[in-house]
Length: 65
Image (cartoon, rainbow, N blue to C red):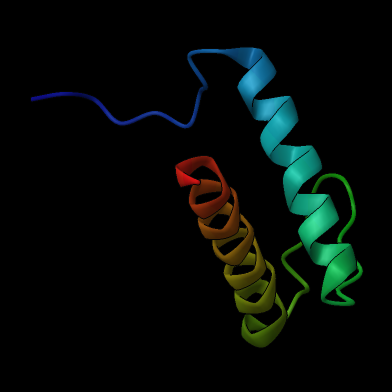
């Protein structure tokens, strides 16, 4: 059975994802900071994740044209 890990295979991917997350948080008005963000509400965290998915879908759709 495969062992689960939070380590990225490509370190640059982690950096890009962190930048993407910060950008999405800014767009929805959530004050995200580097490091620990356990003080966010579920609503705030969900807003950031939802914005990230929305942007990924938009990018995918643009790539299909």
